[in-house]
Image (cartoon, rainbow, N blue to C red):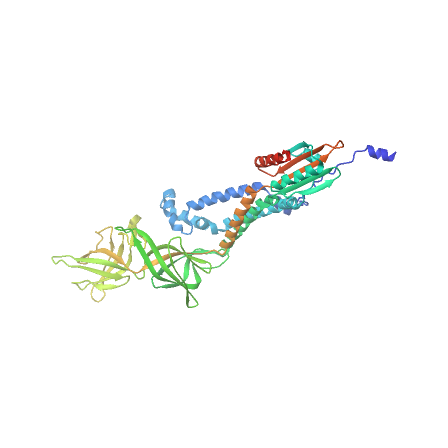
Length: 503
């Protein structure tokens, strides 16, 4: 009686998905809250949007050279307010954004988010990939989206041979399962494609790691080398976050400029090309010589030297001053002077000293002179000091190429600037990024992960051969794919054609 009662009871069904293990989320408290926060896909979207907007700002605001933003700020906030706005931007880090603490913080937030999302979901996918494909049952066969029954007049062995041959012809390696009046063949392709998205996730983390290493220990700088001169340090424009350095960074070797070549378009002063022949000196030995040009740098010990600019070296430059005597005697003489040099004006006992000069100036408000560049562009300025015998000062005058009326009042000469000469220097942009190789590794993995995720699919195929009690042999073909079902339907149709082909 007890057995009958028990037999009439319904056995409870255990609905625990044993084949889909989940990451444990037991417990309460700050750790669980933080875990749930960082495992949210909404956080991923928000962080990506913020990084995209920040990157757009980074393309509008000049990086590593704050003064390039002055004209833009003056147009927006006015000339008087532009310096204060620029000072605020520098303090916030908008002019060196990709090395700022808050940009690094955003990258670390996104890295944590991606890492926890991966940890949250990867174990189930790995379990699915490593789990062996099992034969289909009647219940699972009915639930397959792609399936078809084919009745055949072949016996069991002939039908089994046809099924195995059809699957092999489609590129599958079928496994055989026999049980009673049933033979089943099943196979799968591309099961590791489910890991493609996680390869992409890990590659993004590697890229971020390389970027962070570059931010913490990498630097950017600028150097000027005159022909024949050597440098062993550079001026910093982007400082590493984890290194306490001043405005200069010593190099672990020396760099010499052997030759600078400037090529101009015919009949103009516009450069068509400029090249620098550089030699690296390490421990007193010339170890590397290369002629660099724009986008073709010299690299040694992870430090790159890019051709960036050129000009005449201010410390070695001389300016040509033409003096024309006032009066009936026409007296013209040109004087080529370096900064601080003096000469006696011909036909007089007056001494002229070239106290300072600039080859390119702009006249700002209140006639304020500002040096714009160190290249001669017809807008030069020179400060001349005149003195009588014995060194008694007579007058100081500022001579401007743009204003011929700017002349001394107490000296019987008129002056003009007619030339600017000297040895050229090569301007080099110097970068050191110890994380660049890691970034390239991450980029390679990212491409690989995307190709796996988008072009390889997890396909599974089953063929059941069942013989009924009356001797009727039936083939049931079934298949599934994790994505891109339309392509798989065509492949499944070709498999059915092979099964239906008469031998």
